[in-house]
Amino acid sequence: MFKVKKRDGKIVDFDIAKISDAIKLAFEACDKNFVPQVIDFLALKVTANFEPKIKNNLIAVEDIQDSVEAVLSRGGYETVAQAYILYRKQREKIRNMEF
Image (cartoon, rainbow, N blue to C red; front, side):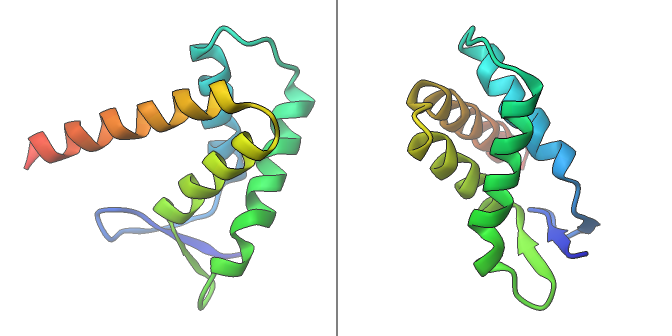
């Protein structure tokens, strides 16, 4: 299995559940109904989307997040993708304020 490089440089094991959780939270933020099987399917599609970006068994967290956005947008979940993008931008502002 491959590893994920976080923004702070730490290397952690890949966990598809984190992708599922992020997608679920985006759906909930939009008050969109969903079934767990759809969330799991979208998470698998995200993994397939970023697979070409894996180098030396390592993927950057930003590449994973870009793939989440792409899969949601292409899957007809534009509103959910926008919520996810907005969340990413808010988190970026918070990270920038912490430094």
